[in-house]
Each structure stands twice: as structure tokens, then as C-alpha cells.
Image (cartoon, rainbow, N blue to C red; front, side):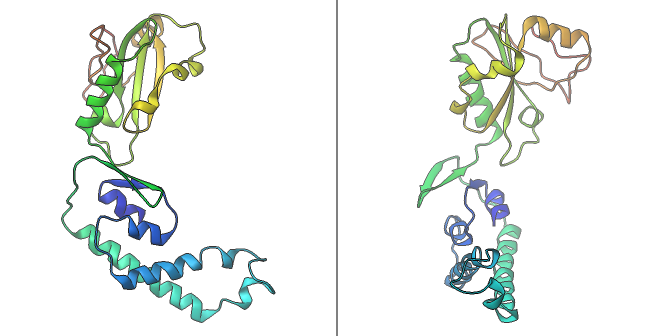
Length: 224
């Protein structure tokens, strides 16, 4: 079910099969809703020895219940397979809430890079020199669920490298993000040592740009 959500360009945080069906942007037959309800009912009780007033779960679940559950699961899997082989139609990026469970349409690469550029230009960080993107969004092989990898270069920092991202408002970006923060001296050292880092569209209020690599920066990344 979650694979189908990803195939349709959205991510849903839920475990119940019924919820996963309800939040699909597709018509779902009532028979599948009934199957989902039955599978959700089987989710907890069979796993806990004290789920019933008397006796272990094995007294209440046998071959008939197992075959029924397998049949329900098979019907849902067939529905998912049929939906995934149809031509993909994904609407524009949006966020919605259905029954308290967040459902998010994943933004495309252009939207993410635009958001990073705007985020970098608004970034209030002492000594900021440049901000960049590396990894899947730089290479172009991102997918639904991909986080964005950032490199931030500052003139100086008194913090240990592991503590430096604390100051970054990563939560303002449209997808999950991770950042590496270097001083210019550290960045230049990486370049001199021949470190390889894929980077693209790196902007920080016009103060600097890190070159893009195809597919990686040969001889090390350099700030300019």
C-alpha cells in the first residue's frame, strides 16, 4: 500500500490498512474496505498473549481465519498491482490532512531547488559564504521520499562540526534535509585533498557559488 502511495507521488504516515486505502487519490471498492477492516482487526490481537479474556490467541485463530486473511491480503495486492501498472497521473505539489493523518504530495526537483535557493538567500547565519545542494537532487536521480543534502560554507565557526547544523532552520524546507557545515578553510582543505562531492545550484545571497559536478567534481569541490 505504501508503495502505491509513493508511486502516485505522495507519502502517507499510517499503519492501518484502512487508513492507507482511504487516503489514496483513487476510487476504492467497498469490498476492499471490508477486507482492510478485517486485516486491521487481525493486526494486534494475534500477537499478544493477553489479548483475550481467557487463553492464548491460538485458541481464537485457526486455518479458517488464516485463509480468510490471506484472501483479503491477496485482493488488496491485486488492486495495488493493477493501480501501479496504469499510466501515472500526479497532480501538482500540495499538502492535505485527512482524518488527522498527514498526506503530502512530494515536490519535484525544480521545486526543491527553488525552495533551497530562497531558503539560502534568507538564511541569517554569521559569516555565511555559500550554500549548496549535493546528492540525488544535484544528480537528478531523486525520487519520492528523497531528502535534500545541503553543504553550507561559512567564514568561521567556533562550534564542533557536528553541532553546526543546529543553527539551520531546516524545517522550513519542503522536504526533509540534512546539512554539512564547513568553514572556508575546511572546504579548501577538502578540495586540496581531492575530496569528491556532487554539488549544484549553490547560492547564498550572491556571496558565492559552488560549482556543479557531472557526475562529480573531479579533483575536489571548490568555492568561488
